[in-house]
Length: 149
Image (cartoon, rainbow, N blue to C red; front, side, top):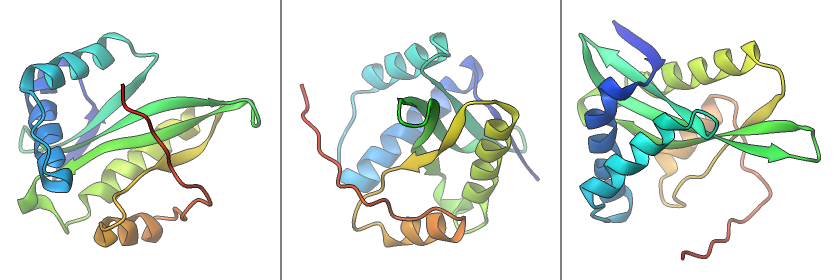
């Protein structure tokens, strides 16, 4: 049985491990551990930025995702951005992301002022894209641009 709950300080070590593994798997980036620890702690300390959901199997975290907030003045509501999705390899293909995303939806419906969900995915990650589509998400008509400081 898998339980999904909001992440706390207790899961910092697992969330950091998941984030570092995801960066390596998707982009071959080696993230400095202390930077990621500080980043996870920073979010947990400032709930106005977002929250983590953690999937737990037999007392052990096996996957997580991060939700952050983006204000939409066009909608007078908030988009919830799904980020940092990671599932341990041995738990993939078993519906774990579906459980996590279902909890995102449930929590959003409990709040007023959430207009929808967004995420970005690597262009080559067609498996994840198929999962997102299967769960009701559609490709947005936008390209993403960034400038790193």
